[in-house]
Amino acid sequence: MISSIHTAFKVIKCFSHKTQELGISEFAAILGKNRSTVHHIVLTMYNEGVLVRTPNRKYRLGTKLLSWGEMVHEQYKSFFMATPIIDNLVKRTNEIVHLAIIENEEVSYLIKKEPNKPINIATGIGTRQPLYCTGLGKALLAFQSKSFIDKVITKGMTKRTDNTIHTREKLIQELTQIRKQGYAIDNEEFEEGLFCIAAPIRDYMGNVVCAISVTGPEFRMNTERLSIRTSIVMSNAMNISRQCDL
Image (cartoon, rainbow, N blue to C red; front, side, top):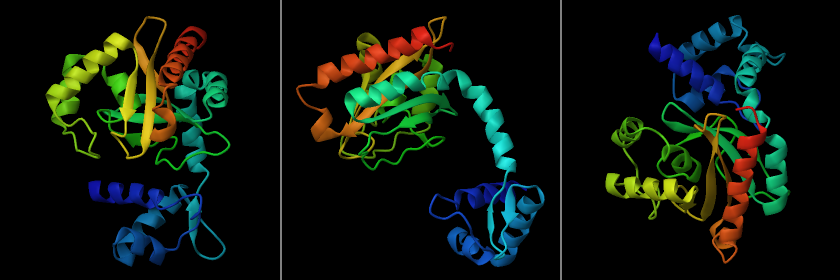
């Protein structure tokens, strides 16, 4: 049963903006499973309305996901109130801006806004990344409980680049500094060539509930204007804290 559920989620992940329809043989090839196994799972998903059969006997995502999406959107709608502020931040910096929360000990991206000429970065709405090596992750992690931080560290810290913090001592030191200064920096720790400035956002009780970041190429972000960009990110984070009902 668990294996079937896992495969069902993998079936959904086979789709993309470029690949919106797939046949059984194509699913099987992507997933590395035999046709009969895939056919059984796809048929079940079809009967539940998660997948729809097309005239050419392929499958695409069904409207059932839209109803689920509406429920999810309702849960997070207070965060989406920050969109106008984020749009303005994109215009001011001409870089990619994210808003993210913590889910299941990872960074979960809720909003991603791009400038007219965005860079290629492996993030998207709903995607998740590690807490310990991303700007958003560290901005959020720094304000969590000691037990939560220990839990994240215990899961392991894979060294993704030469700059990745991958020891407990260095991460604790980094998080302490973030709490003092009020922002976090990802200096090519998650992906080589990328630089990120992130700041926490608080709810009406002062709890850190999400964070925003500005991300761009290291050569463009890590310059003499770094302090100015940092101030802009922090001020926009404070504006969201004040203006949005989080």
